Each structure stands twice: as structure tokens, then as C-alpha cells.
Length: 283
Image (cartoon, rainbow, N blue to C red):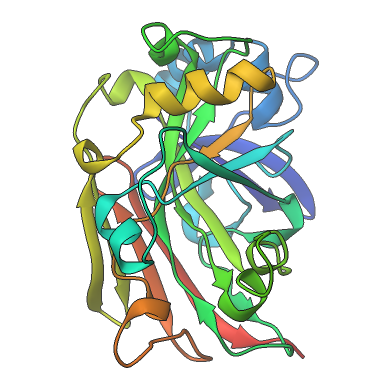
């Protein structure tokens, strides 16, 4: 099942996608879930799937404004340098533990919305990634049990302002400019994607393929990421782990390639779908 967060009639809500139609789930789960995060936290995803099989699709997907899949995650933990080719192109070394940083909610947009190039820099780079949405929280989750803690998967563009990222040893500013990342279009529930299923991740800019990798190429697997992160902080339902980008980023190309107004960037995960965003300048 594909689950989305969206806005319609001035109201934020959530639903299930059925082809090019949407089933608004909020009325059916009123009093039990106010948004997609609370639906996941209340362990109602399976019930929502059963309801969606027989419910009438009331809205056209094209007529709503999508929101980031989880608009209000408690935390967004991003994994850096998690594919060998990307480690090599940055001139760094593979580390025994995952390299982590955090993103803020305000740094994201949804599928179909424009990523914003800020006034302070034109070095806006793409980073195609797979997002993991936590379904069941926990502390010190084992790698073997990690699959039981996943609600679903989505596409993510960890858009980065490169000169601000490398200005110091800390990456936070360059990874958190307002509306530079993207998260969507929907979450495919974990029952649709088997544990250890190989997924293919592709990034295209204006139709040109710039990144391609499969999940078996990750240095730190998804179970390893969940186990490592949950060691130092409890994971909660609705938290998001952004699992790393492969080689081919624009900052390391010759000549360098950065996103500019009028561009269209696509992040595709074969088991999920395509996240598509335009680029425009901040006004």
C-alpha cells in the first residue's frame, strides 16, 4: 500500500493511493489518528490497508497538494558516506561506524514542490537516497529484529549547499537550508518490500542519469543503521532514516554540476516510485 500526507481544502490530512486516486483516511480513523505519523504509532497501518481495499477513492491525486511523507517526524537521521563510490570521490576513508547528521523538518519539501536555491549560494547539489520510516520504536534494536521496526520506504533528495557544508567540519548548515531537501512522493508499506530485497536507486537531472546504485552496495546496511542509531537514542514511530547517497554527486564531477532554476530533478527507487521536484531561486 502507498500512504501519503497531503493538503486538500485547506486541511492537512493523510490517505492511501489507488492508482491516480486517493482515499482520505482521516475521517475513517478520526479520534485514533490525526496524521500519518499517529496512524503508524497506533499500529493502524494494517487496518488502514484493509479499509482502503473496499473504500471509495474520493479525490484525484492531481488535485491535492502533497506534503512530505511524514511532515512532522520526531527526528530525521541521515547517513553519510554509505556507498563506496561516494567515499572514494570525496577522498575519505570507510569508517567502522556510520557517519551521521540530522536534518530539520523545515529543510524539506514534498513531491511536486520546488526545491529552493538560497540567496547565499548557488552550489545546490542533489543526493538521491532511500528513506526508511520507522514503524515500531525501540532502543538497542538488534539487526536481526530491525525489519520488524520498519513501517515503509520512500524516496529522498538530501539536497546540499556544498560551500556551507564544507565551511567547517560540521555539516549542519549545508544540510539544512530551508526547503532544499525533498521527501516523497509516498511511503510504500514494508509488507510490499521484503527484508533484504534489493532496491535500485537512480538520480536524474533534466532527464540525464547521474547516480545509480543498489542497496546491496551500501557499506552499512539498513539493519546496521537501525541498530547503531537506536543504541544511542530510542527510535520512535514516524522517525526517518535517510540511508546515504551513491557516487556521482555534482560537487565531485568535472566540471562541477549544480542544480539551477528551471531544472527538474528526479529520485527513483524502483520499489517505491519517483520523487520529482523543480528548482527555483529564493525570492
